[in-house]
Image 1 (cartoon, rainbow, N blue to C red):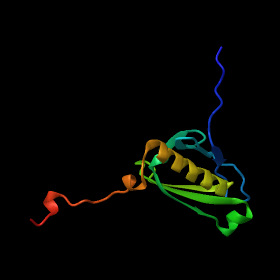
Image 2 (image 1 turned 90 degrees about the horizontal axis):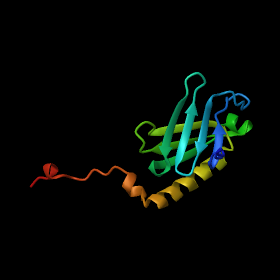
Image 3 (image 1 turned 60 degrees about the vertical axis):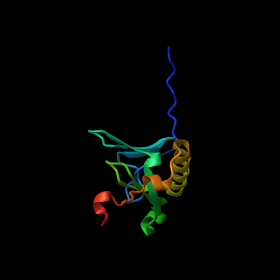
Image 4 (image 1 turned 30 degrees about the vertical axis):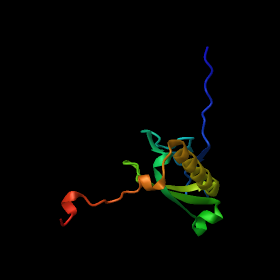
Length: 132
């Protein structure tokens, strides 16, 4: 008889309606040690993942309505092909989620021995581009 393993995640938040912050949506954002997982859907379920070391930049914002209902938005920009930019909108504990995500990204970059410059596209001149 095997024991069911407890899910290991750092933080989990559910997208909420902008009106009153009611969690009647079917989108859940889960921050794990090595990836950000997005689960969407009721009848058709879709799971997307972004590896943390591929995240290039993040921003955090709150509208007046979000402040009133205790929510916020975290925007994530990554080198992921399917999700180059992701808006995690209308979540509670948004500042905690942002800080936890930022710390997890840095930990994963150190684990993978990655630097920010390795993720940025640099256009180096080639032999065909030179005038000589």
